[in-house]
Length: 215
Ligand SMILES: N[C@@H](CCC(=O)N[C@@H](CS)C(=O)NCC(=O)O)C(=O)O
Image 1: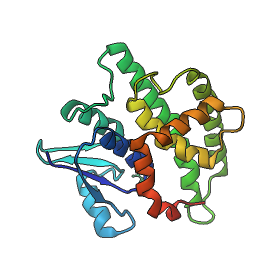
Image 2: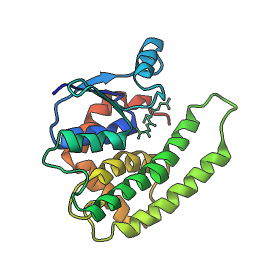
Image 3: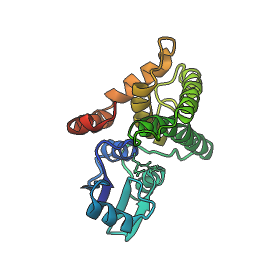
Image 4: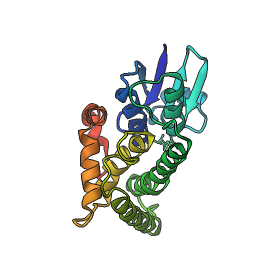
């Protein structure tokens, strides 16, 4: 097996995939991408011109695999381990994918909007867009609060792709738009996620980079 994961240790979508690797102790080589460095950026864009991390290079199978969700599905299919990220049951599978999409689009993306606005050049901020992102986040929080009543993980008893998506999205979202005192199920879910060994390891490894987080 020769897997290389192109990543940055602080990047939230890279966290999503790192959780999957650590869940199953899947061996890989991390390759650090520095988008602020021209040579590193150009080398990375040669792999995936969109320029978004993470990207997996499976040299053994001759595949370049971008997009966090797709990478996790790829690992599930070709390098399965004790944690199955997509349930075998067809209905549970689409419900897992739905929650993965929900966390990416309605928690992760608005969180990125708020964080991204903080590093825009002076005078180019987008307060209207940031407020819209906060409104989206609060609505998502309410949905998660209801959804997580009586559940350990996003799909119930089993840790899946949906939890890989939820962990970094909620971790960073809670920093830029706090959950508030009334959303106990949501807060307890993030607490469980941060104690999950795979995610705890990701957070630990990111510690030396946290000073780069804006705000
Ligand atoms: N849909 C992509 C999103 C990836 C993404 O937004 N990655 C961020 C880091 S968390 C990135 O590469 N940002 C660099 C940029 O936008 O220039 C995925 O799921 O992998």
